[in-house]
Structures are given as C-alpha cells and as structure tokens.
Image 1 (cartoon, rainbow, N blue to C red):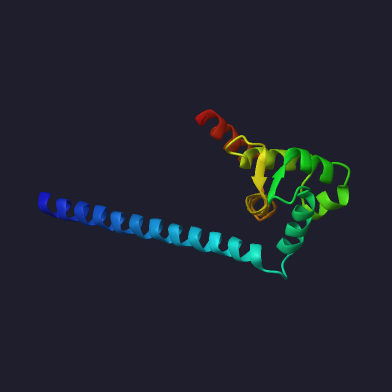
Image 2 (cartoon, rainbow, N blue to C red):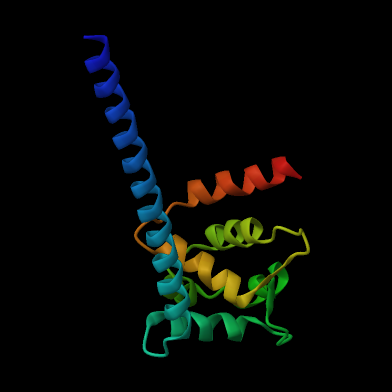
Length: 141
C-alpha cells in the first residue's frame, strides 16, 4: 500500500512539474510573439501606428527623436482631435510619459512612447496598471 501511494504521488508530482514547465515555455513564446507583433506594427506603414508615429514626430519640435512634457504640452494641450485620434486624454498622456521616463530626464524616445501608447490603446487598456507600475518604479528608486 505504501509503495502504491509513493508511486502515485511521485508520478503526480512529476507530471505536475512537466506541465508547469510546458506552461512556462508557452507563456515565454507568447510574450515573444506579442513583442514581435508590436515591433512589426511600429514599422508597418499601412497601420494606424504609422499615423500615431506621424503625430508624435510632429510633436517632436526640436527633432531629436525624444518627447519632453513641454513639447507635448505645446503640441497636444489645445488639440483635442489629435488626442482623440491617439485614443487618450491629456492626463493619460502625462501619466504615460511619466511612467515611461524611468531615468527622470523628462524625455522619452518616440519609439518607447509609441509602444506605451500601443499597450494603453490595445485590448488591455489600463491606466491604473500603468500608474501602479510608475509608483512601483518610483518606490524602487
């Protein structure tokens, strides 16, 4: 009886381990393809991402490839049509900028801002999660 229980539990734990490894690998592959799809969308000229990129490039007043809060205020603060096209309000744009500015320099690259914008306007839109991530990064500093 003890031997049967031992064999059963050992088999159960081994299958549990194999299943856990399989799920972990599947999640890693899914994250890789999700990131790859976002990168591809950044460079696809026929997507709405291209129009987002054009708007952000127009907001880059000094043409250095980075967006500062001052540039964003000058470009977006009175321009509701642009913000509507991006799918965010002004406060959400500021929160996104602050969350992505991990070095505290006040500047975020256009590509990084565009990826953050895609995450916010995609299926998993959540300004609250972005805010939590920002607070967490501040806490770690």
